[in-house]
Length: 417
Image (cartoon, rainbow, N blue to C red; front, side, top):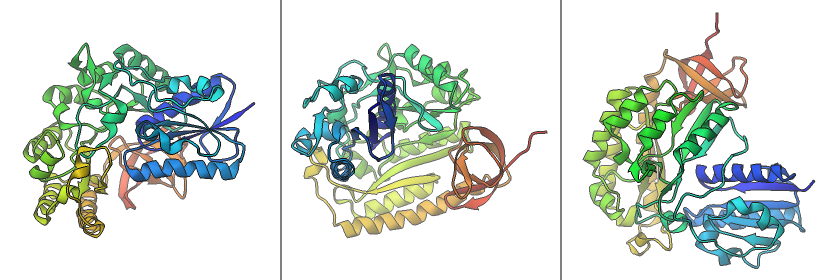
């Protein structure tokens, strides 16, 4: 039996697609692993969101060749879609494709291919993932129409296209028989449509009877409406965690980024969420140092993060990306960006503690994921939980929040009578 190692870089969508390739490979008789160890074949599912991500993809080739000088290496994903040449002539690289064609993994392993397939205009992708984690993903759409000036992904993944509603429901039912939580993922799930009309609310209403917690991936604020929140609040299995992509708290920078909202509009949607979900975990992403960001513009962002009281902010120093509109914009010294990351991180930690303080003494549930020093997992609000009570990974337990610990909280499991 030949062994295949699947290496996944980047987003949750890549993870889903790798898990689907794992199913295809296992069904064909291959042994499949995610661990970088000795194998006959290696598949690198690459990322191109930053230049550093592409560099990591190339570095894996060298790591593999150290493990097995006779390895057969397959490259796929966004980095090869962006620049196929960077992987050609590398030792033991047998096939290279781009973002499309992962459902053809068996053909690509058995017949050398150096070709980026045309990006589909209709949804077409691998499906039926292998279970590899406690929390599982379902891909509901692909591509993006937003064209933020800093982002290369719309050029690599194509225009937005949605997966069939019944196909998603069918996969959710199957996954719910083996996993207690499902995350809906895609490049821009806010753009999900049925028959050309916005349909994220319709999809969620169809998932309310699935016997698993349903968690949404990253959202654009345009999708946040009273109608959607009414549906979500009626669901017993909805995880009240909203990751709302912000990127900057300054309106001039938002305009330069081609983000299609103002800070006032963003704040209005946050307040609307909190009307329906007072304890919702609201997280975001912020890019600092974008396009010559002034000190005043950075201070506007810092003040807005304080105002919104995000429970957690993923903070990134801006990194210019060849192939994007913003590549020609003014850039700032790395030292300034790092200083602003540090300053925003202070606000981030303060907001995090304030949010967690609301849960001390409250009851919730915890999906246990793994055993390290403690048993660790997450609540529906996506609060990392730590317990030394005896529990079983993969199961959900009723818990009581006790106190802060690291980036989450210590919890006690509530014993059933």
